Length: 407
Image (cartoon, rainbow, N blue to C red; front, side):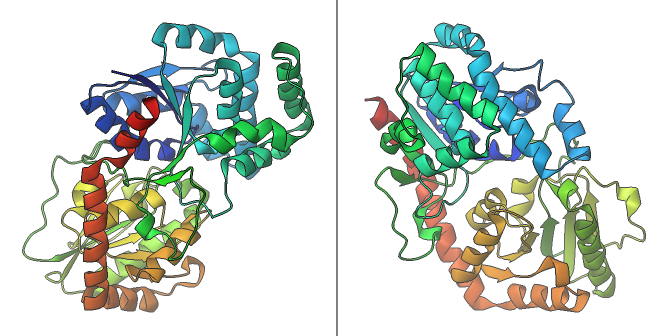
């Protein structure tokens, strides 16, 4: 039995792809722990894993909720900078934890590659990186780390470099040399390679594993119904725009109103909509909800996808992978970041369509819904990709690779 510590970054959404892999490792008899800020503890505990809180005096209870209300890109960067800086300034807190657990390997989010490098120099514990997005061919750990360092305020980057020169005797001539140990560390991408752009070439330490799908729907703060009953033989449409609706509240509300308008015009016996509006909205914000709509603050997504015919989504990779695993074609409305790339891959593999949420009319959305639902080619392509995803998931490639590295 090995002892593993998962070290996710500060964003709750990046936790979800870790749970399938962590469960596979636990089922093989390994001792799995998590380490991170207080905000993510409840979710990790819901999945049955030990969680060790760090930096609770900085990332206090309610910190993330307050952050969402006043979100700006600069504040997100500041939060990430605080996290990395405290790995240096309060390394003693990790000393006690690592001495207690005696981990054999660290599984670190590639969103905190610099943090992983700091842990490498300080503890020399074997480490690999878990990547919850599909990286570009040149998006290596070394390049990611250097970008992180260059993005830091100068006093924090100087503090990090001086710390290792002083405590470890490192002679740091340039950033590439400082980040060099990352060249030999494995990067596990939680997505089958078959979903990437055809012909893509990646370095040998890039390992595309299973999608690491949640098999059950677990939420923390938002109650969900035990079951959702859909009368008759209706086609179910599931619509949700992810956990970051606070970033695009006006766009998302306009979209939700457009979908409701479409459902009011439909024969109630044809389609049924399950609309997950997220924590930024209240159900009372919407009037005249038709009988063919079930509106929830937060839906048990994996359960809903099991009987859905179509998903309208922002295109976050977690949702995209779950849609594929359960064979649900998509209308993708990307908002930010890698969602645009994921939408491109959906179109490339003909698993749905991509639309521009900024300029999407009610008529175009309704036409797109009918197109995807009635398109036999999309249905067949989705079935083929679903088979690949389920085969990879059953093979537990990630757990096998980690066990190979441990040996």
